[in-house]
Length: 68
Image (cartoon, rainbow, N blue to C red):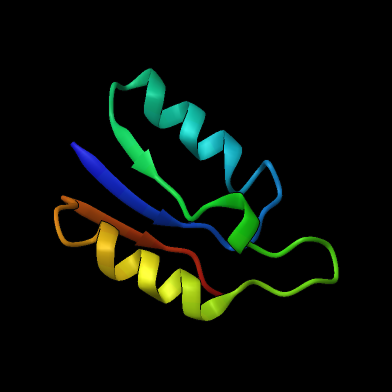
């Protein structure tokens, strides 16, 4: 099963830990490349993340979007 996951930000609790949990269940969890995500006070590269979403959701079974 492929899960496409857009985390809230790049902190380990919102990006790394979900990947580790999915691996325990044998699922493929895709997240945006780290160099496209935010870094402290540097915002995410939103255009690149939209392009990533379009590519990855084409064959994903589940999409999880974290928003506030």
